[in-house]
Image 1 (cartoon, rainbow, N blue to C red):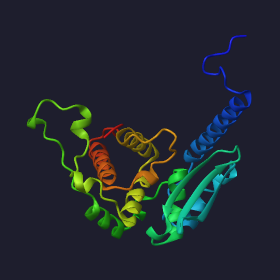
Image 2 (cartoon, one colour):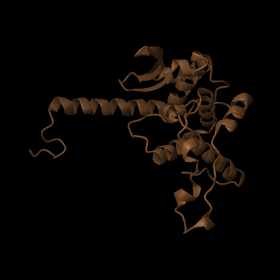
Image 3 (cartoon, rainbow, N blue to C red):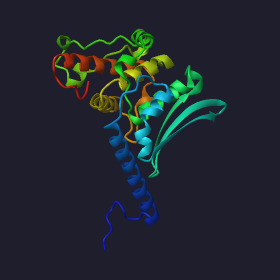
Length: 241
């Protein structure tokens, strides 16, 4: 029997482990997809509210843990979503960069499970802080040069110095809340566009912990503005901003 090049020289036990890992990840993905089809938006991102909304996921073999982990004398809040099949996804935030650990654990769990936030529940204070904190976005002027590509025509342009500045914990949380307020199709489109634009590795299960700079918030803000404009015009949400 001839071995395929991809398997030649690979120990059988390693192939078996790879197969088991792939099967476990597919089982977790299937369980999350099934849960997200029925999940209801939560009125707040408090951990208790998110856990209550996540009960159908727990019934399908999903569990979670939230713990403080010491990293060279500094603590990280780590939230892990696990599946009975063995796969897991993780989100982390520095504990000293969040105001409320239970609130932070709530929105981290909501991001991992795909639990949306009810639009009317979005706090005014968070929205105001987010609008003030986001970098100014400018749309490229098509008349300024030769015809730009579709990506250049729609992607936000942020001042180089401002773009790389870190977001505050409040700005990050406000941006997460805006994402969670989207319908599932909108969140999927935004996630795909964000991954492509910022070249997020395929093995990263969530973009939640990738939203750290003003350029990330500006990109998301621009995407949401386009969704709102196309929604008013009766068109579908854009696949890529």
